[in-house]
Structure formats: C-alpha cells, structure tokens
Figure (tube, rainbow, N blue to C red):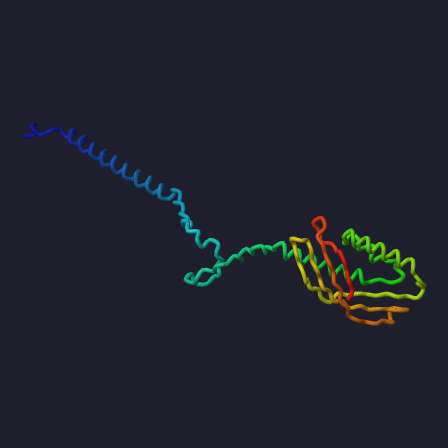
Amino acid sequence: MKKNQPPARCKFKIMDRRTIILIAVAGVLVISLLVIGLYAIFRSPEPVQAPEANLNTSNANQPTTGLATNQPPVTFELPQPVEPVVVDQATKDKADIERLARTFTERYGSFSNQTDFENLEDLKIFMTASMRAYVDSFIARQRAQRGDTSIYYGVTTKVLTTEITDYSPSLGRAEVLVTVQKQESTGSTTNTKVFNQEAALDFARDNGSWKLEGLYWK
C-alpha cells in the first residue's frame, strides 16, 4: 500500500511554487498602490481656468457706477458741428462802408488849431484822388488865413448813428448818413459846448476798396 503513494518531496515543491506566485502578485499589487498614491500626492495641481472675457464691447465705454446691472446705460451725445455762416458780398460791403464812415467822420471832425491839420493828412489814404485834391486845397487856404493859435480852439467828434441811404454795387457807389455829437472847446478843454450834427458821406469803389469821395456837413 505504501509503495503506490507519491513521494512527499514533490508535494512540497508544488506548494512552494503557489506561495511564490501569490507573494509575487501581492507584491505587484502593493507596488501599484504605492505608485498610485505617490502620483496622487506629488502630481501638479490643475490650472484654474480664468473666466472668459466678454467679447461684447457694446457697453465697453460705459462708466461703472456700482449700481444694479439692470440700470439703463449712460449715453453721451456729441455736440453737433456748427455750420459756418456764409456772408454774401453785399452784407460784407455794407459793414465795411459803415465802419469806414464811422472812423472817417470821427477823425475828420476832430481837430484843433494847434495840430496843423494832422487829422486830414492821416485820412488821405482813405480818400479818392478827387477828395485828396479838395483836402490839399482846403489845407492850403486855411494855412494862408491862419490867425493866432495861442488861444486854443478844438472840436471832438463822436459818431452816434450810421445809415446807408444808397448802395449800388454795380456802379461802385454808396451814400451814408451819419449823426454825430460834437464837443467844441475854446480857450481850454473845460470851456465846452456840446451839440449834434449830421453829415452825408459819398463813397466810391476805387481799385477794389471803398474810399471817401465827399463829406458834407448839414
């Protein structure tokens, strides 16, 4: 009976091989778990994704007020461009004529017997040739008849109103009625007499500019 049983040594070897396999499998599992644990501990944290920028720029230039978002948007209105005022030639001519009439009359009517007609000499550039000839003749006569200038006599003229009574651009002619206030002084500037007077001025276009052709006190 005992001769048919397998040797005890063979049974021991089979049991030892199984144990080795189990130990190997257990070792692999332990190593795998260890590797997974180390990876979980030392892995880099995932980057936090920044919120996407709002690509809708329709309200980009609106100021932030800190109020609720359901408030109506603040809008700004740009000023409308101002159209240039177009001035026609007739309006420009009349303004030039009235300005010249005012300046010429005040200068022409302001003088003294001690200034040797400087007011008229300065105004010659605003006169036509015929008016200059008349002024030169008038100055010559007054100088020839000049009396005693030691006693002061002078007149100061200020224009009150101007009115264009005739304007003919095709003919190059214009007439202006001027009302002035005169202050006449004799002996001193404190001894004065004040009165109003009118003057009619004739203008003619000369080489593209308006010039005085005649002044007549009324």
